Length: 97
Image (cartoon, rainbow, N blue to C red; front, side):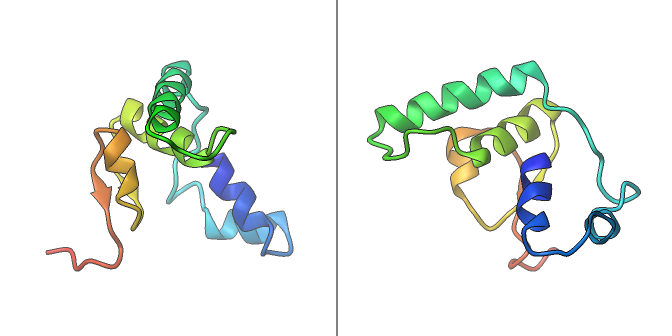
């Protein structure tokens, strides 16, 4: 969540705007568990072994690992998360019935 918070801060003018958008009543603010850090590293290693081009850890690996370790779903259209993590992906572009 912190990486998403940081990305959004690049397009908003104040921390108050961000806090309004990511209200603590709607979003839990948690620290990244050590287990998620390890899982992210393992996923990144698999990515590199499968000819992945990036040489630095992507925030997506940390986000996906955090969701997996915490047992929570992830809102994203990026199906790549499910390739590396056993998580429920909630695609906002798909209708939820």
